[in-house]
Length: 344
Image (cartoon, rainbow, N blue to C red; front, top):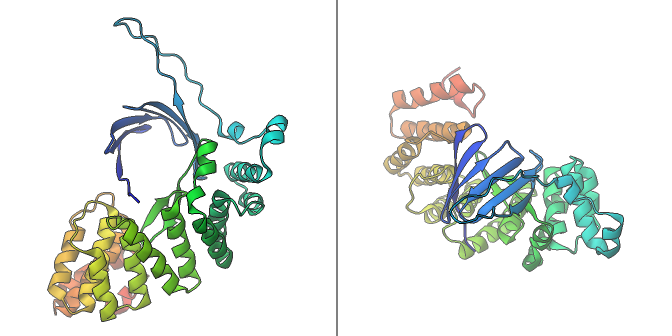
């Protein structure tokens, strides 16, 4: 299993440069309706902001005559609701279980999550329906059902994404990975297991969550999202536990600070070092993490400064610890036990 990195650089409102291993592309348009121009041609992407559902179609290339370029033809962007509305005749030839998938996706586009869940539950034997049902159950805090349906999707992982591809849909769902970080997942084994880990954590099944992440790490040892998820599970299972701390250090390894995910990994590495009494190494790790603040979530930066304050206290550097605590208190007076540590 590979982990694909990409970076989006916002040039102007509605204009984005996308950088990836396959080359650069340019996206133009507001959220939910974009044209992307790149080495593989032009793609139109249309969706409903906030739903996580998108429809992407490849636009035909303009024909040229000699060295003269053909005039650009007006583009009619596809409509996602129309794409997910089956006609009477289409329903005659569409299997009932696939109808459940299409109808569920359509209800998601319209914002009716309860109705969407009812449709997906009609065809839980289909991996994509089980995946969607599990995510909706997770969102609605029906954690036992989420575990059941996501496990069903994982057991049929070979079929995950088949219906999304058949109907030209792309599903990108944001999932909380740590207390400070969210990641996008897709309907595949990786995305299903990461969602299942969240459901396991919510139901107190820490051993099962750890097992899923360790299996994923064997498949994708360089996936930073999986690594930070496992580090979080280990830390929450036993904060300051030396055995867990050593395992976290093995998971985090030697890393830089390239992305917010790597910054979160540095946070857990520093926590593990502090738990083992390696305060100087913990301070150096935190300073490395705090050198880059651009594009880093504020709550992640706050967690790093709080951890550094604890390390400063352990090193006997009370003034430096208080400086970090005061800056956190100025931003969020209710953060952790900052007020008590400041004597307020």
